[in-house]
Amino acid sequence: MGFYGGVNYGGGYTGEGYEGGRWERDHFRYNTAVNNINTTIIHNTYNQTVINNVTVNKVSYNGGAGGIAAAPSNRDQLAARERHIPLPVMQMRHINEAGQNPELQARFNQGRPPIAATPRPAAFTAPNVVRARGAIIPSAAAPGASRPAEPGYRPALQARPG
Image (cartoon, rainbow, N blue to C red; front, side, top):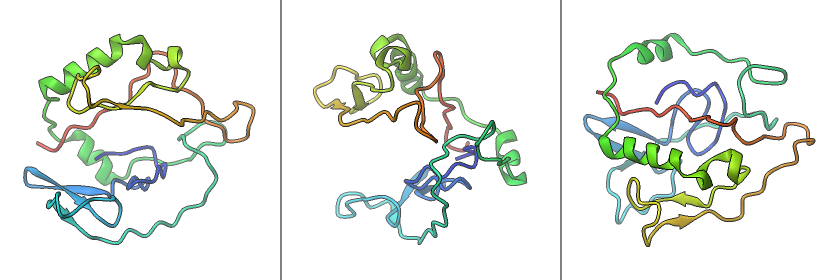
């Protein structure tokens, strides 16, 4: 999946890569040791124990004062230089439409986006859109508190290996 700054985000992102699933040929398989998957419906799964040795310090950024000091491994650097396939048209449309919607921009929603998930790309008003709820933004004065992304920030998207 690529280098994520050495931050252990949980949910399979250990800071050393993604342990919640893997690509096998052209199919993605989910690790049931990390993801809550209904295997009676989803069959592309495997079960591999993930050892989670983590120091809980609530730091969620790499670099800067108090940040994690991590760098991509040689393997990460090699992967970054490999040929990558472009994003699918619908994923690009989703990104562009989300970027045009002020409600989905951190500078407008203060880190509380109204949408958590869509049933398909670019379906922001579809009947099955999952509304976000219960997000709590920590006080900026609290030690180790996170803050909303800078205006114009877009996370790096990783395409599957090609």
